[in-house]
Length: 108
Length: 139
Image (cartoon, rainbow over all chains, first blue to last red; front, side):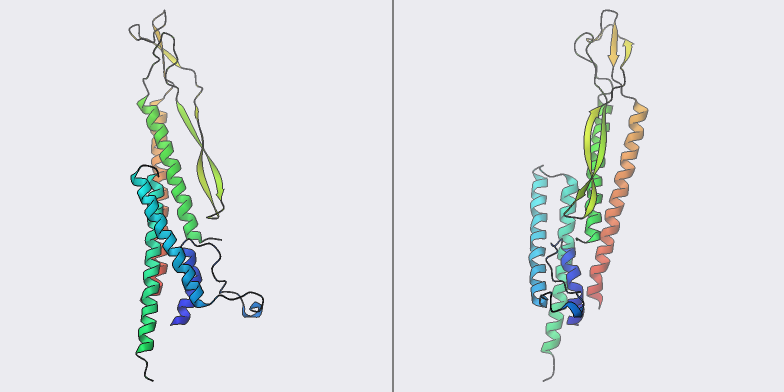
């Protein structure tokens, strides 16, 4: 199950409007020596940081819109972006919690 | 390189802004369709025009649309015989604004249609993103 999360996570971090600093997880194994591969935890951490900044940007733009400093279109775009990011975060959290519960139920 | 879906949202949002600016110009023209000058022989309201340009957004990696400039229509004013008007010259002729209602209405309809098209793009993109996120949930 964690394999599927690892495969999806670079795309997720892009959905969050991230800078292309996210892990190049799709590098072919042959060039693995030259490119340092970020761990799954690093990818998750950077994704969470991006998500928080996107949601904060949504809130800031919404406030600016209420003050009349941002256009309606900007507000809608920022809020939509925040909403999508939140959906992604919730989906990833569900996945992680599910994986954790599965491990805790494992018979040793 | 950012996500293509995000890039399309951004360009559609810029289209929304551009078309709403166009709508503003149309409404100014319609509202001032009979605004004459204040002094005898003075020029009346001059019709405004809007033009767009495309700008490359490095952040999104997409071409956005932006208002290039709002300029004035140089079509000559038509005169009308209105001796009682404050802007009437010695012959009683008043210069009327060069606003053509039919042109404005057509422009307004076009702006409205473009705006709708851009909102449809945003709706569709949003649906696609939600479907992609849902892939993670259902498994």
